[in-house]
Image (cartoon, rainbow, N blue to C red; front, side):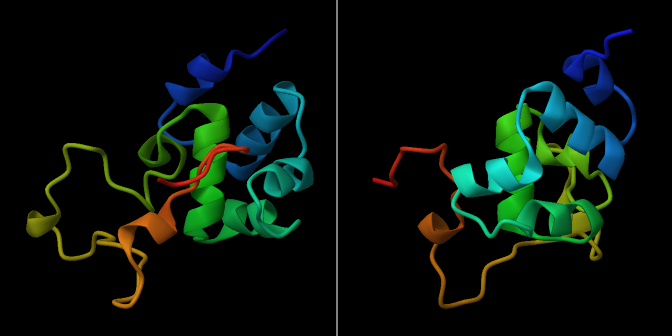
Length: 112
C-alpha cells in the first residue's frame, strides 16, 4: 500500500513519524535534507519534537506542505487573525534581525 503525501496532508495533523516517512518516501534522510538546507545534521530531528523555525521551514519547503498543516499547534492557518488570539506565535526574530535572515532558500539559491 502506498501513501500519497498530499493525502497525508489532508489529515488534521502530521506526527513526527509521518513527517519522517514522507521525507524518506521522497528519497531523502533527515540528515541529508538538513545538509541541503545548510542546517546542523540533527536540526531536523529537533524540529520533529520542539519548535525550530529554520528546520520547520526546510521540511515544509521540501515536502511542499504549509507549516500550519504540518504543525497546527505551532503555526496558525493563513487566515488566522493573530489580534484575536494572544497565544499565537507572532514571530521568531529578535529585534536586531531582519526579515531576510529568516528566509530558508532551496539549495543553490541566494537571497537578493
